[in-house]
View 1 (cartoon, helix red, strand yellow):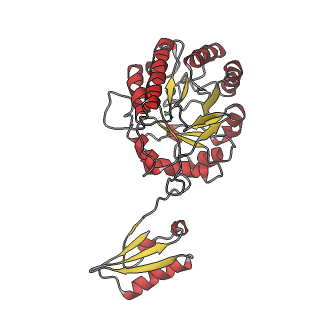
View 2 (cartoon, helix red, strand yellow):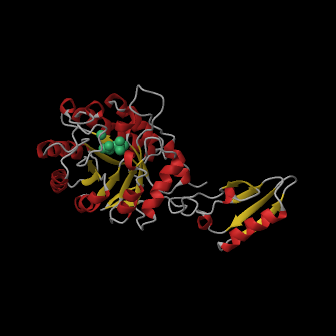
Length: 345
Ligand code: PEP
Ligand code: MN
């Protein structure tokens, strides 16, 4: 961090700034400019996190040089991380596919969906037992019954289970049944929940908030990692823009940006990212081409009867078609040594 002093800052002002820096166990280095002086801070600047430096007399501005997130940053961990979810490796050579209904609606619906998902070649079954719905009158999920069905579907198919946890009180229960805990877009900055999933002992899928910057998103990952859980996978699921045709604007540029900033794997959710099943295939293929480590897609045995997110849910036929194309695309990229992202810089 550097502290830019005002042009008229006095020697006493600078002395006071240096004193605060040194009191916090850090080193200060004054650089003389033609008009202004700058104080460089050497050491772990998180020690100054609660010091209001910009309120000090003579201080113009503080500028961060290194990132506020460390554990999630590539600066401190140059090699890409692979997150191992009970044997399934996210961030390796193969794109990992998480598919299933928006919500677990019944045992029959989930089992039917799980068989379809498995047949298409996905590794994970998704499905919400706790649903974060915009309206309190909409279907809220089957809660613990839904978790039991998910665990049964895992037994039946061998698929791993990823499912959302919406409140701190449910973390232990969801961690008992699921292989991976999902933190949804609406909870990306629910810091209590982030800390709780960080302590739950299961890998976490962290979706990007509806209006979150990459910096905010990676800081949210830092909350989880700071509790001792390094197994975080990011999921780009679209952000709010002025466009209303799509449900969200899928920010595929987040994939190379996150790969540059962080070592964590990143997958893409073109279902919530567009809100339209017709747009899932082109965005899924684009995401893999952009370097995503996998995809999350909503699939329903009968989307017209879905209790949530029917318009973006794939029919079994469309899902199968997308999976065939994804496998061809990733084989082509591998055979031709096409790597969208250069992680050596
Ligand atoms: C979901 O994946 O079920 C979901 C609610 O997605 P998001 O948090 O991205 O809206
Ligand atoms: Mn959904």
